[in-house]
Amino acid sequence: MESIAQREADIIEEFSFFDDWMDKYEHLIALGKEMPALEEPLKIESNQIKGCQSQVWLHATMEEGKIRFEADADAIITRGMIALLLRPVQGQNPIEIAEYEFGFLEPLGLTAHLSPTRANGLLSMVKQIRLYGVAFQAIRG
Amino acid sequence: MNLSVIRSHFPILRREVHGLPLVYLDNAATTQKPQAVIDALVDYYGGYNSNVHRGVHQLSQEATDAFEKVRQQLKGHLNAAHSHEIIFTKGTTDSINLVAHGFRDLLSAGDEILVTQLEHHSNLVPWQILAQYSGATLRYVSMDGHGALNMKDFHAKLSTKTKILAFNHISNALGTINPVKEMAAAARAMGATVVVDGAQALPHSAVDVQDLDVDFYAGSAHKMYGPTGIGMLYGKTSWLEKLPPYQGGGEMIAEVAMDKSSYAGLPHKFEAGTPNIAGVIGWGAAIQWMHSVGMDQIEAHEQELLVYGTALLESIPGVKIYGKAPKKAAVLSFNVAGLHPYDVGTLLDQMGIAVRTGQHCTQPIMDEFGIPGTIRASLAAYTSKEELDALARALEKAIALLS
Image 1 (cartoon, each protein chain N blue to C red):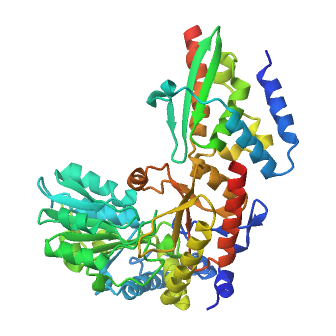
Image 2 (image 1 turned 180 degrees about the horizontal axis):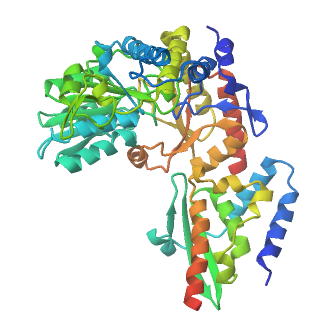
Image 3 (image 1 turned 60 degrees about the vertical axis):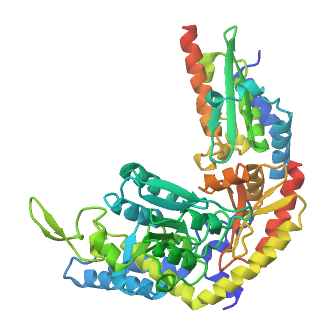
């Protein structure tokens, strides 16, 4: 399986083809539309991350020592961001996820989406992803 | 004064965002500041910075004079009967909390506080806290589908049990202008105290508190071209004398002994601690600036743009404007069919357009419409038709990208 670093490099290369913000956002919107929806029974309050601007749902399970994330949001750009944020961490070991910094957003020029002023639920989702890493690591012992 | 002159007074309007000229349409959140306000702040800190009402020295005298001059200015601007009826606070929220806190021991179970569904959370939560504390019941006046208050419901819910009627002059989320004078008269007839959140009204038109005949009227400087962190509470003398102090400290006392103090007279009784002196002085410059343009001109200009902007946005397929009360301030709250306001707002920002998206601190309104929020373009004295055209073009582009 690809490491977090390899996947980050892939994403950065994928975005390097875009010349302007429109291309970048068109891609983000496409990612948002492609991402499978979270099953309705999983769209429960305990999985919900309330943002003032958009709502995010995050669900995580452990399979054979690897974490599997499923998520959703009500806004498409937020969904696109989720698809992007989950790519490096999907199916990785809990210990790697617990300390992961999502540094690839910086070269992509998308860090603003994690700003607290956006209140879109993404910053809380990133924290929640790391917490799942910590929790599943603890279970594994 | 023509628009290009007005715009030239605002240095921030010359900047770019994401490489494009800034189109600032978030004026209901805060307005930009004219150079005169920025200069007043610099002049104060650079020329006569000093604490007020304390020193015998020259600087303190100059600062106190400038500070108190603004109280006089506000008295005139609002047509208050006395300058001591103007209490400086941190802002509208602080003003409403001052009143709500003052009523803690004046209400009891069986009493009612009447608010409306149109309220900003700042004119809702303080009353919820007061209700919880005192045992009084909080009741709501509903709104109709256009975002106007349901006056039948208002008259039905208003009774002699109503001790406080609290509502906004203009809705921040929808722009609805409420019939303050009519509502205040009806409330007074029932013996209720009338508290008006004027944050969104003061920037757009002249307000006469004696003509409206309200007991309290709250406002913020930063929504009317002045600095942040400063606002005021107008209160009728009889009420301000009756209410207990909100906070204790320096400046608000007459005599202090170890066991008990007596309080200073109005307005100082409600102004504990060193006030936001620079903010007050900057606010004075802002009011002066508004008068130099003319309150009537500001109102007429904004109303013209509101008509223009409404027609423009409605010409774009899928756009629905929320809040179409017959009397309305220059706020365009809208959504695009099938699109999330956050997505639209994010793309508009990329095109240099500053709008607010979300619930605008008015969750009850959004719940009523059954929407997650709106995109809100709020206008000011310096807004131009070209900026509304830019909004419309950017909106069409955003819709194309998202569809």
